[in-house]
Image (cartoon, rainbow, N blue to C red; front, top):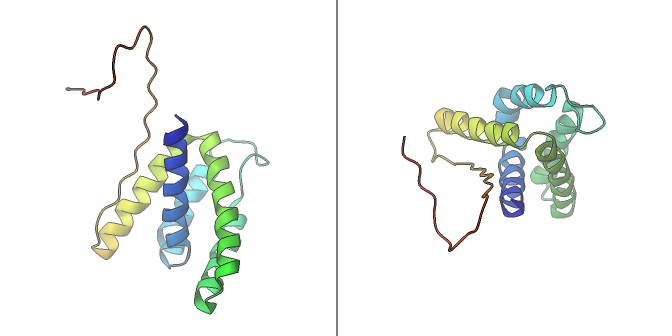
Length: 136
């Protein structure tokens, strides 16, 4: 599960970090973040939308000014925010990333991105490694 969480954090930082410096943040991402952050979690556990608004302004300015040091600082802060959101609601974060990627692809006509989170529990002995296939 730790590898899945690490992958989701990396995907979240890359996706949100990229969208925070574009106008897609205002058009698509902000409202979806509001929905996720307003999911009944205690406010001290999660960042507020004002934190993401500040990151949006900071990352945009750092990118426009070519300030790599400031950009790394904002990305480090974003990594912490994404991690706290994943701790509170991993499926919600995966859904958020997937939906903003889909919407951004539809609006821009670009290539699709995918987000996947797997949480399996195996009871009993494991005799070998392999891939689980489900057919419905």
